[in-house]
Amino acid sequence: MESAQSKGETMGIDRKDFIESVAYLLRETFEGSPEGQPSVFLDRGIGIFNTLSSINAEAASKDSYGTTIAAHTEHAKFYLDRICEFINGRTEKVNWEDSWLIESVNDAEWDALRDSVRRAYENTLKCIAEDRDWTEMQVGMAMGMIAHTAYHLGAIRQMTKAN
Image (cartoon, rainbow, N blue to C red):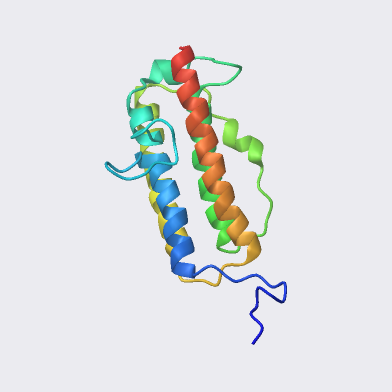
């Protein structure tokens, strides 16, 4: 009997395995690597949350390489929110420039922005966990979320070193 792979077709990944893998990578990006487990990042234990918690509003608002940590933070949150909307069926275009509108923050605004990042992350985990038949486009969006948030984690960490 000929298998699907021998006929040039691809075998699908188990939905549960896919969801768990995406969630694991997002958790590591935001929460840091779990103690005693392998890490996809070289800096063990480092995530967006503990990186942002070590930054005050003044440092978040300081220009570095033509942007700020606050701008990167707002953009990463905005991206998560919009990509979940697209995964859930949104079709109307997004003005991505709006995701870069916040450049500086005071203490209260910085606290609110960090809280909104946590909510966006929690909503993203719920979005990924929804029972759905994943299309190729949705899988690509989920992979994009991982790459995009990892990039911004790295950018923010580099900016903290430059400040």
